[in-house]
Amino acid sequence: MSFSLAIVGRPNVGKSTLFNRLVGKKLALVDDQPGVTRDLREGDAKLADLRFTAIDTAGLEDATDDSLEGRMRRLTERAVDMADICLFMIDARAGVTPTDMIFAEILRKRATHVILAANKGEGKAADSGVIEAYSLGLGEPIRLSAEHGEGLNDLYAQLMPIADEFAKRAEALNDDVETDVDLAEHEADAELDPDALLPSQLITEKKPLQIAVVGRPNAGKSTLINKIIGEDRLLTGPEAGITRDAISLRTNWGETPMRIFDTAGMRKKAKVQDKLEKLSVGDGLRAVKFAEVVVVLLDAAIPFEQQDLRIADLAEREGRAVIVAVNKWDIEDEKQEKLRDLKEAFNRLLPQLRGAPLITVSAKTGRGLERLRDAILRAYDTWNRRVPTAQLNRWLVEMLQQHPPPAPQGKRIKLRYMTQAKTRPPGFVVMCSHPDKIPESYSRYLINGLRETFDMPGTPIRLTMRGQG
Ligand code: GDP
Ligand code: GDP
Image (cartoon, rainbow, N blue to C red; front, side, top):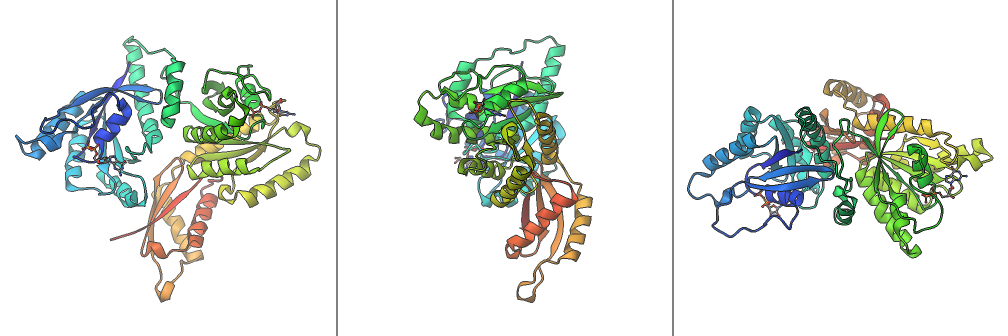
Protein backbone atom coordinates (compact mmCIF):
# COMPACT_ATOMS: atom_id res chain seq x y z
CA MET A 1 0.00 0.00 0.00
CA SER A 2 1.38 3.33 -0.85
CA PHE A 3 0.86 6.59 -2.63
CA SER A 4 2.79 8.66 -5.10
CA LEU A 5 4.22 12.12 -4.67
CA ALA A 6 5.20 14.31 -7.60
CA ILE A 7 7.73 17.04 -6.98
CA VAL A 8 6.95 19.93 -9.29
CA GLY A 9 8.19 23.46 -9.73
CA ARG A 10 10.29 25.56 -12.03
CA PRO A 11 13.89 24.59 -12.83
CA ASN A 12 16.57 24.94 -10.20
CA VAL A 13 14.42 25.24 -7.11
CA GLY A 14 15.82 21.99 -5.73
CA LYS A 15 13.43 19.27 -6.87
CA SER A 16 16.12 16.73 -7.70
CA THR A 17 17.91 17.44 -4.47
CA LEU A 18 14.78 16.55 -2.53
CA PHE A 19 14.06 13.59 -4.78
CA ASN A 20 17.54 12.23 -4.14
CA ARG A 21 17.14 12.72 -0.44
CA LEU A 22 13.85 10.84 -0.37
CA VAL A 23 14.92 8.08 -2.70
CA GLY A 24 18.46 7.70 -1.48
CA LYS A 25 21.53 8.93 -3.23
CA LYS A 26 22.59 5.51 -4.41
CA LEU A 27 19.53 5.10 -6.56
CA ALA A 28 19.20 8.49 -8.12
CA LEU A 29 21.65 9.91 -10.56
CA VAL A 30 22.49 13.46 -9.69
CA ASP A 31 24.24 14.39 -12.89
CA ASP A 32 22.71 12.98 -15.96
CA GLN A 33 24.72 13.08 -19.15
CA PRO A 34 24.51 16.51 -20.70
CA GLY A 35 22.20 16.80 -23.62
CA VAL A 36 20.10 13.85 -22.60
CA THR A 37 16.60 14.96 -22.00
CA ARG A 38 15.40 13.60 -18.74
CA ASP A 39 11.75 12.96 -18.37
CA LEU A 40 9.80 11.98 -15.32
CA ARG A 41 11.89 9.92 -12.94
CA GLU A 42 10.34 7.61 -10.42
CA GLY A 43 11.87 6.12 -7.30
CA ASP A 44 10.92 4.29 -4.13
CA ALA A 45 10.98 6.95 -1.49
CA LYS A 46 11.11 6.81 2.25
CA LEU A 47 10.46 9.44 4.85
CA ALA A 48 10.57 8.12 8.40
CA ASP A 49 7.94 5.36 8.39
CA LEU A 50 6.28 6.46 5.16
CA ARG A 51 6.97 4.55 1.98
CA PHE A 52 5.85 5.98 -1.31
CA THR A 53 6.73 6.54 -4.93
CA ALA A 54 8.43 9.84 -5.66
CA ILE A 55 8.18 11.39 -9.09
CA ASP A 56 10.73 13.96 -10.13
CA THR A 57 9.95 16.38 -12.93
CA ALA A 58 13.39 17.90 -13.12
CA GLY A 59 15.26 18.08 -16.36
CA LEU A 60 13.31 20.82 -17.98
CA GLU A 61 16.47 22.80 -18.56
CA ASP A 62 17.38 20.24 -21.17
CA ALA A 63 14.38 20.97 -23.28
CA THR A 64 15.46 22.15 -26.70
CA ASP A 65 12.67 21.02 -28.92
CA ASP A 66 9.95 23.15 -27.52
CA SER A 67 9.36 26.31 -25.61
CA LEU A 68 10.30 25.84 -21.99
CA GLU A 69 6.96 26.93 -20.75
CA GLY A 70 4.99 24.66 -23.01
CA ARG A 71 7.04 21.64 -22.10
CA MET A 72 6.99 22.51 -18.43
CA ARG A 73 3.26 22.81 -18.52
CA ARG A 74 2.76 19.44 -20.17
CA LEU A 75 5.23 17.63 -17.97
CA THR A 76 3.73 19.11 -14.85
CA GLU A 77 0.23 18.28 -15.92
CA ARG A 78 1.27 14.73 -16.61
CA ALA A 79 2.93 14.43 -13.20
CA VAL A 80 -0.07 15.96 -11.51
CA ASP A 81 -2.39 13.51 -13.18
CA MET A 82 -0.16 10.56 -12.31
CA ALA A 83 0.46 11.42 -8.71
CA ASP A 84 -1.71 11.21 -5.65
CA ILE A 85 -0.03 14.19 -4.05
CA CYS A 86 1.89 17.12 -5.51
CA LEU A 87 4.69 18.78 -3.74
CA PHE A 88 5.01 22.20 -5.30
CA MET A 89 8.41 23.67 -4.67
CA ILE A 90 9.54 27.26 -4.87
CA ASP A 91 12.91 28.81 -4.10
CA ALA A 92 12.48 30.78 -0.88
CA ARG A 93 15.55 32.84 -1.60
CA ALA A 94 14.19 34.01 -4.93
CA GLY A 95 10.67 34.53 -3.62
CA VAL A 96 7.57 33.97 -5.74
CA THR A 97 8.27 34.43 -9.46
CA PRO A 98 5.79 34.75 -12.34
CA THR A 99 6.67 31.19 -13.38
CA ASP A 100 5.77 29.97 -9.91
CA MET A 101 2.39 31.60 -10.33
CA ILE A 102 1.79 29.70 -13.55
CA PHE A 103 2.50 26.48 -11.69
CA ALA A 104 0.25 27.43 -8.83
CA GLU A 105 -2.55 28.02 -11.29
CA ILE A 106 -2.12 24.57 -12.85
CA LEU A 107 -2.05 22.94 -9.45
CA ARG A 108 -5.06 24.77 -8.10
CA LYS A 109 -7.08 23.62 -11.11
CA ARG A 110 -5.83 20.09 -11.41
CA ALA A 111 -4.36 18.59 -8.27
CA THR A 112 -6.28 17.08 -5.38
CA HIS A 113 -3.57 17.33 -2.75
CA VAL A 114 -0.97 20.04 -2.94
CA ILE A 115 1.82 20.54 -0.45
CA LEU A 116 3.65 23.81 -0.82
CA ALA A 117 7.35 23.83 -0.01
CA ALA A 118 9.62 26.86 0.16
CA ASN A 119 13.03 25.32 -0.43
CA LYS A 120 16.50 26.69 0.22
CA GLY A 121 14.90 27.73 3.46
CA GLU A 122 18.04 27.59 5.56
CA GLY A 123 19.14 30.97 6.89
CA LYS A 124 17.61 34.41 7.09
CA ALA A 125 17.83 35.08 3.37
CA ALA A 126 14.80 32.83 2.98
CA ASP A 127 12.55 34.53 5.54
CA SER A 128 10.64 36.82 3.23
CA GLY A 129 10.31 34.21 0.48
CA VAL A 130 8.65 31.85 2.92
CA ILE A 131 6.11 34.51 3.84
CA GLU A 132 5.55 35.39 0.20
CA ALA A 133 4.68 31.79 -0.49
CA TYR A 134 1.38 32.30 1.33
CA SER A 135 0.31 34.57 -1.51
CA LEU A 136 0.12 31.55 -3.82
CA GLY A 137 -3.07 30.58 -2.08
CA LEU A 138 -2.01 26.97 -1.56
CA GLY A 139 -1.96 26.99 2.20
CA GLU A 140 0.86 27.08 4.68
CA PRO A 141 4.25 26.56 3.08
CA ILE A 142 6.74 24.12 4.55
CA ARG A 143 10.10 25.71 5.06
CA LEU A 144 12.47 23.19 3.60
CA SER A 145 16.13 22.83 2.96
CA ALA A 146 16.47 19.86 0.66
CA GLU A 147 20.21 20.26 0.69
CA HIS A 148 20.59 20.31 4.46
CA GLY A 149 17.72 17.99 5.25
CA GLU A 150 15.79 20.57 7.24
CA GLY A 151 12.02 20.73 7.43
CA LEU A 152 11.53 17.06 6.66
CA ASN A 153 9.60 16.68 9.90
CA ASP A 154 7.12 19.26 8.66
CA LEU A 155 6.88 17.50 5.33
CA TYR A 156 6.20 14.31 7.22
CA ALA A 157 3.51 16.01 9.29
CA GLN A 158 1.73 17.16 6.13
CA LEU A 159 2.08 13.84 4.32
CA MET A 160 0.94 11.75 7.24
CA PRO A 161 -2.79 12.61 7.21
CA ILE A 162 -2.95 12.22 3.45
CA ALA A 163 -1.13 8.93 3.69
CA ASP A 164 -3.68 7.85 6.27
CA GLU A 165 -6.45 8.60 3.85
CA PHE A 166 -4.88 6.39 1.24
CA ALA A 167 -4.27 3.69 3.81
CA LYS A 168 -7.93 3.71 4.72
CA ARG A 169 -8.98 3.63 1.11
CA ALA A 170 -6.61 0.76 0.48
CA GLU A 171 -7.96 -1.13 3.45
CA ALA A 172 -11.43 -0.72 2.10
CA LEU A 173 -10.20 -2.26 -1.11
CA ASN A 174 -8.61 -5.05 0.85
CA ASP A 175 -5.24 -4.16 -0.46
CA ASP A 176 -2.02 -5.55 0.88
CA VAL A 177 -0.80 -3.55 3.80
CA GLU A 178 2.82 -3.46 4.75
CA THR A 179 3.29 -4.94 8.18
CA ASP A 180 6.95 -5.76 8.30
CA VAL A 181 8.93 -4.10 10.99
CA ASP A 182 12.45 -4.43 9.83
CA LEU A 183 14.36 -3.08 12.74
CA ALA A 184 17.79 -4.06 11.54
CA GLU A 185 17.35 -2.02 8.40
CA HIS A 186 15.83 0.81 10.33
CA GLU A 187 18.62 1.06 12.85
CA ALA A 188 21.21 1.22 10.13
CA ASP A 189 19.30 4.20 8.73
CA ALA A 190 19.16 5.87 12.08
CA GLU A 191 22.89 6.28 11.99
CA LEU A 192 22.71 8.17 8.76
CA ASP A 193 19.59 10.23 8.88
CA PRO A 194 17.99 11.72 11.96
CA ASP A 195 14.76 12.08 10.08
CA ALA A 196 14.45 8.39 9.33
CA LEU A 197 14.20 7.31 12.92
CA LEU A 198 10.67 6.07 13.22
CA PRO A 199 10.40 2.33 12.87
CA SER A 200 8.75 1.22 9.71
CA GLN A 201 5.35 0.04 10.69
CA LEU A 202 1.78 -0.13 9.74
CA ILE A 203 0.35 3.25 8.93
CA THR A 204 -2.25 3.76 11.58
CA GLU A 205 -5.44 5.71 11.59
CA LYS A 206 -4.59 8.27 14.16
CA LYS A 207 -1.23 9.88 14.20
CA PRO A 208 0.33 9.30 17.59
CA LEU A 209 1.62 12.19 19.60
CA GLN A 210 5.39 12.02 19.51
CA ILE A 211 7.15 12.53 22.77
CA ALA A 212 10.74 12.18 23.83
CA VAL A 213 11.94 11.70 27.38
CA VAL A 214 15.40 13.17 27.72
CA GLY A 215 17.70 13.72 30.66
CA ARG A 216 20.92 12.70 32.25
CA PRO A 217 21.85 9.07 32.79
CA ASN A 218 20.06 7.65 35.83
CA ALA A 219 17.43 10.39 35.93
CA GLY A 220 14.88 7.61 35.62
CA LYS A 221 13.93 7.73 31.94
CA SER A 222 13.62 3.98 31.49
CA THR A 223 11.67 3.62 34.72
CA LEU A 224 9.28 6.33 33.57
CA ILE A 225 8.76 4.88 30.10
CA ASN A 226 8.23 1.44 31.62
CA LYS A 227 5.59 2.84 33.88
CA ILE A 228 3.85 4.55 30.99
CA ILE A 229 3.74 1.51 28.78
CA GLY A 230 2.96 -0.67 31.77
CA GLU A 231 5.28 -3.52 31.14
CA ASP A 232 8.87 -4.31 31.78
CA ARG A 233 10.06 -3.93 28.26
CA LEU A 234 12.92 -1.59 28.81
CA LEU A 235 14.72 -3.12 31.76
CA THR A 236 15.97 -0.51 34.14
CA GLY A 237 19.08 -0.37 36.20
CA PRO A 238 22.31 1.51 36.37
CA GLU A 239 24.33 -1.08 34.49
CA ALA A 240 25.26 -0.37 30.93
CA GLY A 241 25.15 -3.00 28.24
CA ILE A 242 21.51 -3.95 28.40
CA THR A 243 20.35 -4.28 24.84
CA ARG A 244 17.01 -3.37 23.49
CA ASP A 245 15.62 -3.55 20.06
CA ALA A 246 13.46 -0.53 19.54
CA ILE A 247 14.12 3.14 19.35
CA SER A 248 10.59 4.38 19.58
CA LEU A 249 7.66 2.68 21.25
CA ARG A 250 4.02 2.87 20.38
CA THR A 251 1.63 2.97 23.27
CA ASN A 252 -1.71 4.29 24.37
CA TRP A 253 -1.26 6.44 27.40
CA GLY A 254 -4.74 6.74 28.72
CA GLU A 255 -6.76 7.25 25.58
CA THR A 256 -3.98 8.98 23.72
CA PRO A 257 -1.90 7.16 21.15
CA MET A 258 1.70 8.12 21.66
CA ARG A 259 5.03 7.26 20.24
CA ILE A 260 7.74 7.58 22.81
CA PHE A 261 11.30 8.05 21.77
CA ASP A 262 13.51 6.15 24.10
CA THR A 263 16.97 7.60 24.51
CA ALA A 264 17.66 5.49 27.58
CA GLY A 265 17.41 2.25 25.68
CA MET A 266 19.76 3.54 23.05
CA ARG A 267 22.24 4.64 25.60
CA LYS A 268 22.25 1.29 27.28
CA LYS A 269 23.33 -0.26 24.06
CA ALA A 270 26.63 1.45 24.43
CA LYS A 271 28.75 -1.24 25.95
CA VAL A 272 31.64 0.96 26.75
CA GLN A 273 31.03 3.16 29.74
CA ASP A 274 33.12 6.10 28.56
CA LYS A 275 31.07 6.43 25.42
CA LEU A 276 28.07 7.38 27.50
CA GLU A 277 28.52 11.11 27.62
CA LYS A 278 29.19 11.41 23.92
CA LEU A 279 26.28 9.21 23.02
CA SER A 280 23.80 10.93 25.23
CA VAL A 281 24.32 14.29 23.54
CA GLY A 282 23.65 12.77 20.13
CA ASP A 283 20.68 10.85 21.50
CA GLY A 284 19.25 13.98 22.98
CA LEU A 285 19.56 15.79 19.68
CA ARG A 286 17.89 13.02 17.74
CA ALA A 287 15.16 12.71 20.33
CA VAL A 288 14.43 16.42 20.19
CA LYS A 289 14.22 16.36 16.40
CA PHE A 290 11.82 13.45 16.56
CA ALA A 291 9.53 14.85 19.22
CA GLU A 292 6.56 17.16 19.25
CA VAL A 293 6.68 17.38 23.02
CA VAL A 294 9.96 16.99 24.89
CA VAL A 295 9.89 15.90 28.52
CA VAL A 296 13.11 16.94 30.25
CA LEU A 297 13.40 14.55 33.17
CA LEU A 298 15.44 15.77 36.11
CA ASP A 299 16.63 13.90 39.17
CA ALA A 300 15.24 15.81 42.16
CA ALA A 301 18.50 15.25 43.99
CA ILE A 302 20.61 16.90 41.27
CA PRO A 303 18.31 19.12 39.21
CA PHE A 304 19.31 21.57 36.47
CA GLU A 305 22.78 20.26 35.76
CA GLN A 306 24.60 21.65 32.70
CA GLN A 307 23.49 18.75 30.55
CA ASP A 308 19.84 19.26 31.52
CA LEU A 309 20.02 22.95 30.70
CA ARG A 310 21.66 22.26 27.36
CA ILE A 311 19.03 19.83 26.23
CA ALA A 312 16.14 22.01 27.45
CA ASP A 313 17.60 24.96 25.58
CA LEU A 314 18.10 22.86 22.48
CA ALA A 315 14.47 21.74 22.60
CA GLU A 316 13.31 25.35 22.83
CA ARG A 317 15.52 26.43 19.96
CA GLU A 318 14.22 23.58 17.85
CA GLY A 319 10.74 24.88 18.58
CA ARG A 320 9.45 21.91 20.52
CA ALA A 321 6.91 22.08 23.34
CA VAL A 322 8.85 21.47 26.53
CA ILE A 323 7.85 20.07 29.90
CA VAL A 324 10.16 19.79 32.85
CA ALA A 325 9.47 16.78 35.06
CA VAL A 326 11.27 16.36 38.36
CA ASN A 327 11.64 12.69 39.19
CA LYS A 328 12.23 10.66 42.36
CA TRP A 329 9.84 12.94 44.23
CA ASP A 330 9.05 9.98 46.50
CA ILE A 331 12.37 10.38 48.31
CA GLU A 332 12.09 14.13 48.90
CA ASP A 333 11.41 15.06 52.52
CA GLU A 334 10.93 18.80 52.35
CA LYS A 335 8.62 18.84 49.40
CA GLN A 336 7.21 22.37 49.77
CA GLU A 337 10.56 23.98 50.23
CA LYS A 338 12.15 21.93 47.48
CA LEU A 339 9.42 22.88 45.05
CA ARG A 340 9.96 26.56 45.76
CA ASP A 341 13.67 26.19 45.12
CA LEU A 342 13.05 24.28 41.91
CA LYS A 343 10.69 26.92 40.57
CA GLU A 344 13.13 29.66 41.41
CA ALA A 345 15.98 27.79 39.71
CA PHE A 346 13.81 27.07 36.70
CA ASN A 347 12.92 30.73 36.16
CA ARG A 348 16.49 31.82 36.64
CA LEU A 349 18.23 29.17 34.57
CA LEU A 350 15.71 28.66 31.80
CA PRO A 351 14.04 32.04 31.21
CA GLN A 352 13.49 31.05 27.57
CA LEU A 353 10.98 28.44 28.75
CA ARG A 354 8.89 30.91 30.71
CA GLY A 355 5.57 29.43 31.70
CA ALA A 356 6.50 25.85 30.81
CA PRO A 357 5.06 23.35 33.25
CA LEU A 358 7.18 21.93 36.04
CA ILE A 359 5.73 18.63 37.19
CA THR A 360 6.94 16.53 40.09
CA VAL A 361 6.70 12.79 39.55
CA SER A 362 7.83 9.47 40.83
CA ALA A 363 8.48 7.11 37.98
CA LYS A 364 8.91 4.37 40.52
CA THR A 365 5.54 4.68 42.28
CA GLY A 366 3.66 6.23 39.39
CA ARG A 367 2.68 9.30 41.35
CA GLY A 368 2.17 12.42 39.30
CA LEU A 369 2.07 10.59 35.98
CA GLU A 370 -1.48 11.62 35.28
CA ARG A 371 -0.56 15.24 35.77
CA LEU A 372 2.39 14.70 33.49
CA ARG A 373 0.14 13.29 30.78
CA ASP A 374 -2.30 16.18 31.12
CA ALA A 375 0.57 18.63 30.86
CA ILE A 376 1.81 16.89 27.71
CA LEU A 377 -1.62 17.08 26.09
CA ARG A 378 -2.02 20.73 27.03
CA ALA A 379 1.42 21.62 25.77
CA TYR A 380 0.68 19.84 22.52
CA ASP A 381 -2.56 21.79 22.09
CA THR A 382 -0.86 25.08 22.73
CA TRP A 383 1.89 24.20 20.34
CA ASN A 384 -0.71 23.61 17.63
CA ARG A 385 -2.85 26.62 18.41
CA ARG A 386 -3.86 29.04 15.71
CA VAL A 387 -5.07 32.51 16.64
CA PRO A 388 -7.45 34.10 14.13
CA THR A 389 -6.01 37.14 12.36
CA ALA A 390 -8.86 39.45 13.38
CA GLN A 391 -8.33 38.68 17.07
CA LEU A 392 -4.61 39.18 16.72
CA ASN A 393 -5.00 42.59 15.18
CA ARG A 394 -7.48 43.78 17.79
CA TRP A 395 -4.97 42.64 20.36
CA LEU A 396 -2.10 44.38 18.57
CA VAL A 397 -3.95 47.72 18.62
CA GLU A 398 -4.38 47.43 22.39
CA MET A 399 -0.76 46.48 22.94
CA LEU A 400 0.38 49.46 20.88
CA GLN A 401 -1.84 51.81 22.87
CA GLN A 402 -0.65 50.51 26.20
CA HIS A 403 2.98 50.71 25.29
CA PRO A 404 3.85 52.33 21.94
CA PRO A 405 6.97 51.20 20.11
CA PRO A 406 10.06 53.40 20.44
CA ALA A 407 10.74 56.41 18.25
CA PRO A 408 14.41 56.37 17.24
CA GLN A 409 15.48 59.87 16.13
CA GLY A 410 11.96 61.06 16.70
CA LYS A 411 10.53 58.79 14.00
CA ARG A 412 7.98 56.41 15.39
CA ILE A 413 8.07 52.84 14.14
CA LYS A 414 4.71 51.77 12.78
CA LEU A 415 3.46 48.26 13.45
CA ARG A 416 0.73 47.86 10.88
CA TYR A 417 -0.78 44.42 11.23
CA MET A 418 0.07 40.89 12.13
CA THR A 419 -0.83 37.35 11.30
CA GLN A 420 0.02 33.90 12.54
CA ALA A 421 2.16 32.41 9.82
CA LYS A 422 2.63 28.98 11.32
CA THR A 423 1.96 26.56 14.12
CA ARG A 424 4.06 23.88 15.80
CA PRO A 425 5.35 26.11 17.36
CA PRO A 426 3.22 29.24 16.90
CA GLY A 427 4.95 31.77 14.65
CA PHE A 428 3.73 35.30 14.06
CA VAL A 429 4.67 37.94 11.54
CA VAL A 430 4.25 41.64 12.22
CA MET A 431 4.29 43.97 9.24
CA CYS A 432 6.00 47.20 10.18
CA SER A 433 8.23 50.06 9.14
CA HIS A 434 11.93 49.68 10.02
CA PRO A 435 11.84 46.11 11.34
CA ASP A 436 15.54 46.33 12.16
CA LYS A 437 15.01 49.21 14.58
CA ILE A 438 12.61 47.38 16.86
CA PRO A 439 14.44 46.55 20.08
CA GLU A 440 14.56 43.04 21.45
CA SER A 441 12.70 44.25 24.54
CA TYR A 442 9.71 45.32 22.45
CA SER A 443 9.53 41.93 20.76
CA ARG A 444 9.65 40.32 24.18
CA TYR A 445 6.82 42.58 25.33
CA LEU A 446 4.72 41.35 22.42
CA ILE A 447 5.67 37.69 22.90
CA ASN A 448 4.83 37.79 26.59
CA GLY A 449 1.56 39.53 25.75
CA LEU A 450 0.69 36.83 23.21
CA ARG A 451 1.41 34.17 25.81
CA GLU A 452 -0.88 35.76 28.35
CA THR A 453 -3.75 36.91 26.21
CA PHE A 454 -4.02 33.80 24.09
CA ASP A 455 -3.08 31.38 26.83
CA MET A 456 0.05 29.90 25.33
CA PRO A 457 2.31 29.16 28.29
CA GLY A 458 5.44 27.17 27.76
CA THR A 459 5.44 26.84 24.02
CA PRO A 460 8.18 28.54 22.06
CA ILE A 461 6.74 31.54 20.24
CA ARG A 462 8.43 32.95 17.16
CA LEU A 463 7.87 36.57 16.23
CA THR A 464 9.17 38.00 12.98
CA MET A 465 9.17 41.68 12.17
CA ARG A 466 8.85 42.27 8.50
CA GLY A 467 9.17 45.48 6.52
CA GLN A 468 6.99 46.26 3.56
CA GLY A 469 8.47 47.35 0.34
P1 GDP B 1 15.79 21.20 -9.79
O1 GDP B 1 16.15 21.75 -11.12
O2 GDP B 1 14.55 21.84 -9.27
O3 GDP B 1 15.73 19.72 -9.75
O4 GDP B 1 16.95 21.69 -8.78
P2 GDP B 1 18.22 20.90 -8.25
O5 GDP B 1 17.82 19.87 -7.25
O6 GDP B 1 19.03 20.45 -9.40
O7 GDP B 1 18.93 22.07 -7.45
C1 GDP B 1 19.32 23.27 -8.08
C2 GDP B 1 20.44 23.90 -7.27
O8 GDP B 1 19.95 24.32 -6.01
C3 GDP B 1 21.59 22.94 -6.99
O9 GDP B 1 22.79 23.66 -7.11
C4 GDP B 1 21.35 22.51 -5.56
O10 GDP B 1 22.54 22.17 -4.92
C5 GDP B 1 20.72 23.76 -4.97
N1 GDP B 1 19.85 23.46 -3.83
C6 GDP B 1 18.91 22.49 -3.72
N2 GDP B 1 18.33 22.50 -2.52
C7 GDP B 1 18.90 23.51 -1.82
C8 GDP B 1 18.72 24.01 -0.49
O11 GDP B 1 17.93 23.54 0.31
N3 GDP B 1 19.49 25.07 -0.15
C9 GDP B 1 20.38 25.63 -1.02
N4 GDP B 1 21.07 26.66 -0.58
N5 GDP B 1 20.58 25.16 -2.26
C10 GDP B 1 19.85 24.12 -2.67
P1 GDP C 1 17.80 6.25 33.07
O1 GDP C 1 19.26 6.07 32.96
O2 GDP C 1 17.43 7.69 32.99
O3 GDP C 1 17.01 5.40 32.15
O4 GDP C 1 17.40 5.82 34.57
P2 GDP C 1 16.76 4.46 35.11
O5 GDP C 1 15.31 4.41 34.76
O6 GDP C 1 17.62 3.33 34.71
O7 GDP C 1 16.83 4.74 36.66
C1 GDP C 1 18.06 4.93 37.34
C2 GDP C 1 17.90 4.55 38.79
O8 GDP C 1 16.97 5.44 39.44
C3 GDP C 1 17.32 3.16 38.97
O9 GDP C 1 18.00 2.57 40.02
C4 GDP C 1 15.86 3.40 39.30
O10 GDP C 1 15.31 2.40 40.09
C5 GDP C 1 15.92 4.72 40.04
N1 GDP C 1 14.66 5.48 39.94
C6 GDP C 1 14.03 5.82 38.79
N2 GDP C 1 12.91 6.50 39.06
C7 GDP C 1 12.82 6.62 40.42
C8 GDP C 1 11.87 7.24 41.31
O11 GDP C 1 10.86 7.82 40.92
N3 GDP C 1 12.14 7.16 42.64
C9 GDP C 1 13.23 6.52 43.10
N4 GDP C 1 13.39 6.48 44.41
N5 GDP C 1 14.14 5.94 42.30
C10 GDP C 1 13.95 5.96 40.98
